[in-house]
Image (cartoon, rainbow, N blue to C red; front, side, top):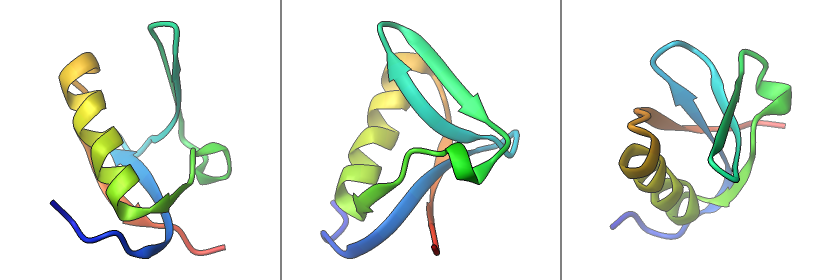
Length: 67
C-alpha cells in the first residue's frame, strides 16, 4: 500500500481524460484537468483507483496535480 503523502492527485485514463466523479452508477470523465476530482493524499487516490478498476473496469494512473 502506498504511503499517505500530502499533496494533490488526480486520476488520468489511457484516453487522456480525467476522472471527475462516479455517482449512482454514472462515470464522468473530462479532457480538462480543471474539472478533475482532486485527492488530498495518494492513499485515497490509489484506493479510488482500485475501486474504479473493479467497479467500472477503468484503468487510470495516479498523477500529481500542481495548482
